[in-house]
Amino acid sequence: MRRTTGDRATFEERFAVLAALGYKVAYRLTGDRAESEDLAQEALARAYLRWRKVAAYDEAWVARVTTNLAIGRWRKHGRVVVSGTGERACAGSAGPAAAAAGADPLDRIELVRVLRSLPRRQREAVALRYLADLPEADVAALLGCSVGAVKTHTHRGLAALRRDEEAIHVRTS
Image 1: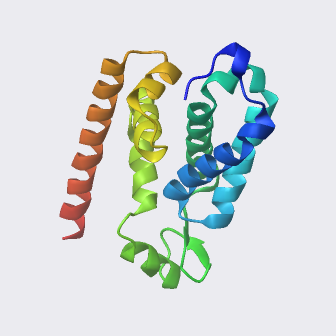
Image 2 (image 1 turned 180 degrees about the vertical axis):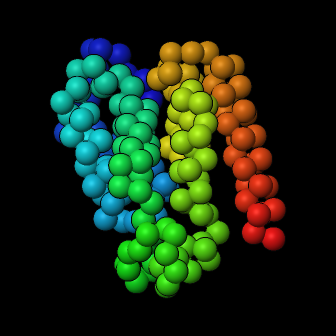
């Protein structure tokens, strides 16, 4: 919901909504509760420091920053797979954690890999629109483009995701 300068909510008033959104986006990307909480906290800390600038589009901003933090963490630390028991292992290793990740219908590691391979605008549009569940108008406002451009970026990004999914199924068959 858009707010004008005169009726902007304070960070404290928006905290619960933004924390839930940041966690939701992070969990969809990582599948790990503790890591999702850390990513959401980091996004909220950054939002707090920049509140005067981001208050008008706070939800979109937190979703975008959380997505970027999750992708950045994967780049920095490599891929880590977490099993249902909380056991961690490198993605390439064998064992219960790797087996559990293969059984997951939404393979988050592949999702992040493909998202990283998309051009920046497509990645941002797909993440904001589908991971954060923001309306096209809000995504357009955040990215500084038209709704039509958001539709184009998301269409192309989803097409790339589908192509990559088909390639994954061909390799594993």
